[in-house]
Length: 187
Ligand SMILES: Nc1ncnc2c1ncn2[C@@H]1O[C@H](COP(=O)(O)OP(=O)(O)O)[C@@H](O)[C@H]1O
Ligand SMILES: [Mg+2]
Picture 1 (cartoon, protein in one colour):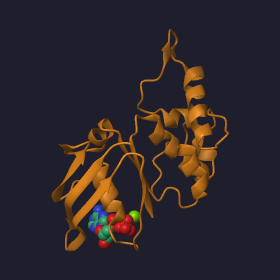
Picture 2 (cartoon, protein in one colour):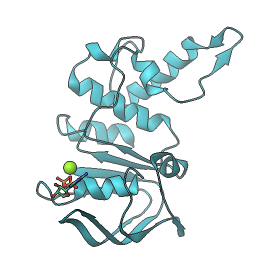
Picture 3 (cartoon, protein in one colour):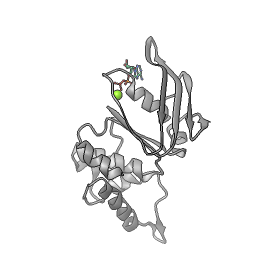
Picture 4 (tube, helix red, strand yellow):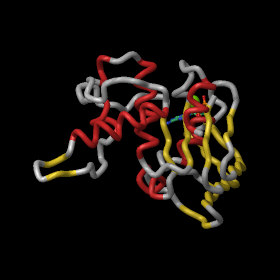
């Protein structure tokens, strides 16, 4: 199962992708309207991850168009998709185990700075606020590698929410979580 949470109008059409002899997607159409939550269900190998990776700029389609709020866009990489608020959380964890929860959540951000450099007090506080949205009450300075897989998945989601995310794509990172609990926490 994959899921999306949308705050923009996304239209994908005519999306096709082959890997060698394997046709992963053929002429796929998907429309997401603001406020909608979608689930994409299909058996293993049916192309769910491929579709989300294309929308998230992780891989490129052989054919097809993507438009955001009526404007056609091309996402040659993840950063291009993120500029339009499209963020994908993939099945594989991408956290840095020896860094803290807050460092992982804000990796690559311009953190609040004071005259001594990055303000860790502010960064930790922002991290706690995000984690609370996900019902996760933990010390933001804890090393991520010491946490359970479940909690690491929630930190991945907190990281996705820390950007200006309007379209959140979750590729089964929630399979081990209580679904209603995290969906309510995103509202
Ligand atoms: N990078 C890749 N290289 C070769 N084949 C791939 C690659 N990614 C996906 N595929 C193939 O594309 C098909 C769809 O895979 P995928 O999108 O991962 O399906 P799902 O997420 O629904 O399980 C499968 O047959 C898979 O083996
Ligand atoms: Mg998959």
